[in-house]
Image (tube, rainbow, N blue to C red):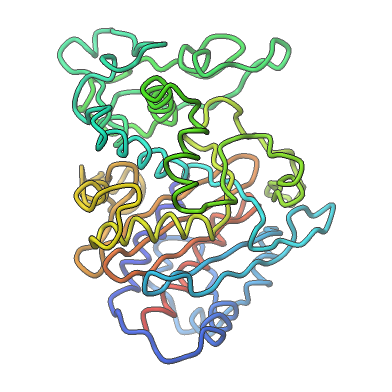
Length: 402
């Protein structure tokens, strides 16, 4: 996750002060969004747009071309229902196969929100505790004890909120040896080349964004359920919500591969996906914006006490409650951390979100306003897709706040 991703949270604060939506038809709204992007290159610019910038609206096609983002898929939920879904461009610049609303994209770190919901489901089933030492539940591996665990322990709550003291790391591996297991990843042992899941700070003492912390949660889920993580996700989330185009299994099967959006680097070159095959919980979801919309609608309805297919209203409200307010200097914008998502706003402006960014060039954004029933989902297959998502989401929020 890059700092630029979080800028959009502040942008929404700026634009989403009015809950009224005009009587324009859905197609008119789409047209306004497609033709109403404002090129933004910095946080300062967003709050000091001059009349020339406001007048110089760009089309989505123009911005896709300029940023070398060749595939985009967008879904908007309004009043807790999918209002429109539309796809643009190609899944692979070399093949020219068009993107459809059923094309698979990499959710990247947006996967963490689904991981959080899976494990909170197990908490509600009294299989886990948010505040006990996770080593009491882990069976096939334990969080190593060191000087940082003398007085404080790693808990599920701390893992979910990036306060466990675990490091940020990449997930390279030695291809000459083979592919690492999840235990190899957690140990930082060959063929894995990542940092091990060893504490670098006292649990609860500071916020440290950690992918490997979510992979500890993955093992926790597997040890408690006795099932592979991908199967647990299928049974707990995908099947009940009919998310038929979502999976944590990679590579995709033969039929799914025909719909897979490939990443493209900053130069616009198509690249092979770099999906991790065993450490899945931090960024391994392949899905569509439509399926992410189904997931988010369920959370929003649960928040309102109108559904409970996965989590109770009480647990969903705990999910989106502020666990801590982050230092604005960390991410470049004021934001709070929930149990697996970022939180902004109050009352009607309350929103939960999670961005995602995978190398070499895939990006995702999920945002839900539970009091309004508004949801925005954008997935792209370009390294500069993060910037494009910023412009698309700002246009959507602007259109739906008139």
